[in-house]
Length: 499
Image 1 (tube, rainbow, N blue to C red):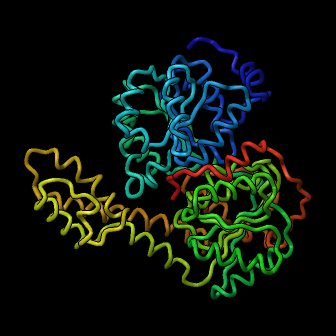
Image 2 (spheres, rainbow, N blue to C red):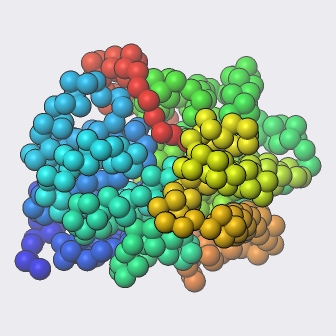
């Protein structure tokens, strides 16, 4: 590898005097064209691991990103650092803006794009004419977490890589068990990629979990707890309806400036809530998991889970949004008896039943092709169930002799394996909830053998006083947007792939 003054570039181009743990090793791998899977904790500066190399590597760096809001924020941040040859392709762009980006692909250093956009024929044709120097999958756990049922284009990234001439790959995530790591690299067809895995636990986060007997008791506990808090707070819900309901309850009782956020809202409304929270115009956001990956707010002090997360990876990613400034912060999980039934119900509804699998194979037999979603209405398949079946059967239909019975057995086997994987994730989350030992050690035991020295209180099992920690912050509104940008945010309507 040619020798570069990486520290000099870091300071001159990005304004930092030193690398955070893991960054330099990942960057050196990228510059050496070594396929790499890098796991670095939330808030550790993963984006620098491709932004800095993109200034050195000849050609275009493609960054596959899961959310439009995340792309918009990243482009804005990169341009603020002085990188002008950067763009994102997404549905918030006007037709003229999109044409402008596509006309100037050859001049770009960085292009942010969704996996769905990469499947568009016109996009593939244009990118095939470019010299792609690096292919980045940001939030790479989405390949494993979403690719099998929700966003199956994540499972087609390997095909895109082949079409682009197999450029070096960098997959980045904040959390991934060894099993998920293998799934990511298997789906990308990069099994020999070097793994750079760094501790995922953040020493400044205090963990607490409170058990109660019913939901009303949980609501009362939440209200009593928030009475002693005055700091940027995120409250996660598994239900859109509950996010709205609790938001209105807290507003009525004057708990500050509060809004809700979920995937069922109009994109313009979601963007407005996010910008208000980032600018300290909101104290609390009641949200679903749709609110998260685009939130790079340094001073979040509290992340509360009203419902039980379905997997520890999601939980770690969400609590990791607190304390990005390195200061003390707290995670609180509220549990009432039987809460595990809701994620279990979601898990079971995401996968097809044996009867639906059999009906789907009959449709293939009668149509002689892959049935469309509309063709499958009689089976009452959800979108995720249909996606699961279609992504698995599509390659089978290219076979000259399709063995229907064998295909049906394969689908049922895959369904059982995937169901068991999801239930195992839920079981791991329950083990963290029910342990009488250190919760921090139990939470991270699936990722690493040791935990870092904590900076404040550890968890409620080690330090019961964690429930009494309160935050009284005097924070000011941050004016990050011009009036033109705020007007754009208010009135520019688009589409999004948020879950």
